[in-house]
Length: 308
Image (cartoon, rainbow, N blue to C red; front, side, top):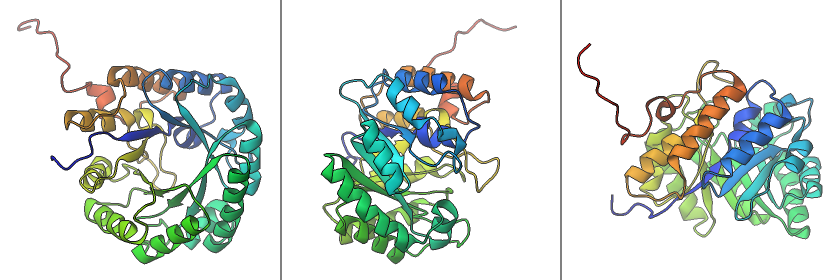
């Protein structure tokens, strides 16, 4: 394991990608979650999505949330935008780190954004130009990078093609999303190898779901390739709308617990993060899927009271 990165960067996506898939929660609770996460050592937090309230009611209060939480110095707070209109709202709210999203699968893109992949890429070019004009950065997330719930496997060449277009239009970095947990380590290795060959100088972030239990295995495969930037959601917050009953995002505390034990630094206080996961459970009113939240870190000891 000596070739692993010395340190990874964690982008906490619970407040946006996690809560977006939950029943709407009060603005105050979202602010409380953001402020708590800001005290854990996490350096990057995806806070909201500036999207149509009709499309995603859970994010209807994005402007209010963005204005209300404490923007701590040294932490980068970002927002996801589905189109130019959302990007304009985000920039007007003062967000300087936006994430545009497009699906490699045309069918999924139409279901998610009501337009083709090509049409989204045309719009993203305008989003990137506007962000740069306003002094902001724009990363592009390529969803369904390892498969689509409608089309099945998405050819690697198709994902590379979409990524190339985004970079050609000025994207500041790329994120690849395993939207419904279809990735496995071999598939991760294949895609990252092709992306590295095609776009060797572009920063890469990976967003894995644990829908089929391969989330952390996929992280390990990526780590062994030198990838050092991952998304995760506190408590495993969120779900997978195309796989009812399944977990969605990998849990932030599980990611931190695993890589820190492997000698890879995160800068995150694990115990503090577990406490925030407990807060997230109270906010959404259900048990979250994180196993580290249930069992604690491997170094935690129980008190022996002798035979009953």
